[in-house]
Length: 259
Image (tube, rainbow, N blue to C red; front, side):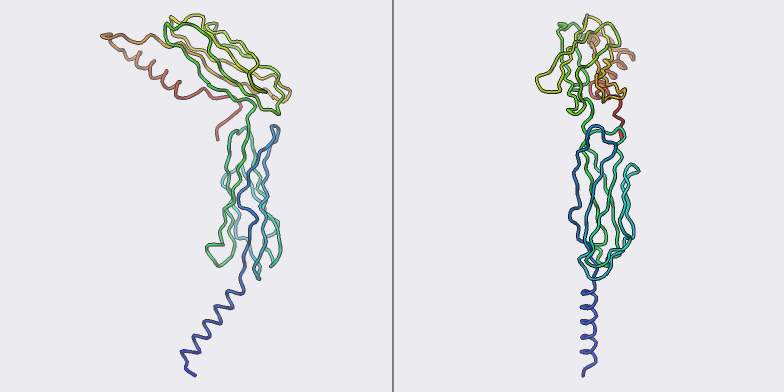
């Protein structure tokens, strides 16, 4: 028999043997959405898998995307037909909003397309209090009518009222119930708009679930705009720059550190 033909038969047989002896993990899902409760300290995702191949699968590495997330496997080796899961635990800390964390899993699967899998944990964390807008302001000389800041409390926090204090007596603040459940309307009024003034509004929710967190908003009367022909001094430029920065960057809330 022709030797080249025999070699071809051998290559085909070897390829078939390799393909038939394949390790492969099949994931039930690679992305999990979580909505932790108000008092939860952690968000835990379970990523289930099954070895649908006919040889064992070994985990080479399981690596979380940041230090606030850990990942744990049940076994280092998964025999054919065996099921298991990888548990990813996200430590919430003071984080709020939508947090996306990943876990990269590498196995000894010879197929590069299957050897690396990225698991995604998305946690939507509602803060104790959401404030909009974080800054209210009046133009110099504008009629000193009240302007409203809306504060929406987490429905699980049991907030009954808000205490709001201005850092200066140039502004007054009054709190009323909002139009929706767990909502409050903070009416802020300047005493005088003929002079530039700035104040921080300290907002404290009255709730047994609150562990001392306070939140902040800001109120400002803008300085008088320079008239035509008036020289703009360096101090005026600096003041205008500060005002523009404050308008573009809302005051952060305490107890909600950035990641």
